[in-house]
Image (cartoon, rainbow, N blue to C red; front, side, top):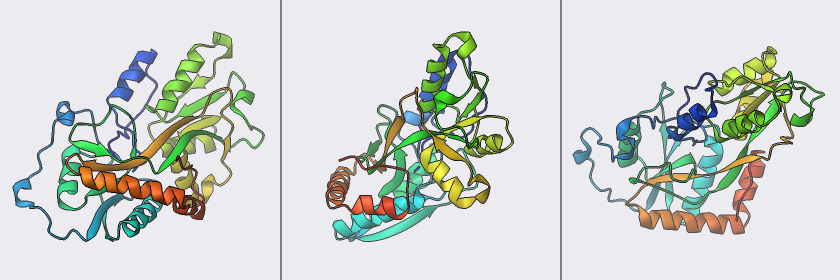
Length: 291
């Protein structure tokens, strides 16, 4: 869950160093957002009245959080429900609600203290999480995809040098694209117009501002399910670029080592017996399972 990211992105930083610096202050999740730009991000946060939150006594429940701003929240909920069943625990869901895009990390810490042991939907980016956080193993792997409204365009290589690409700003796929384009001769370079949000990118495809978009595949999947206006936008082959993929897992507080180990073991068992594959197939979800 897709949290711990920054959703408010606008234009291309040039030179490439600007993009890299932006990426390093952003934690990217599969959907919702938490700002990592504050100096205190890597320190353990302080939640108001946290001394009033005692240790819970009911150990028969698996308390988990999902955020409906994340595109995969329905899939994540089924996965963690299956984990609870494998651990012989009763699943207890807490739905994170917020009208804001840029979430404060202290609030996430408070939510974890009070409402959930596991927070679903985080991109597993090495080295970008604070010490007070621990992450599970991945339960799926997904990629950033190039999409277009042009029915004749089937691969990125077929896009004319005058074509315009609109990546979601600040992602690892955006950085890879810019690195590739900068290595091309000037006359062969596509125009790059980074987009602050996936919604803006998809609307720009429909109105012809850009020819190709670059978006997290689960986000594109969710948008097509929610809005028929996007039904004619399709994924194209990323050649000549390799696919940019990321693992997705869950977040826990770092002192929940036993639960993290149990969660990981349950995920492994659910992969081996085909349960997770069945869940992805049920939703026609654009991800794969890694053993």
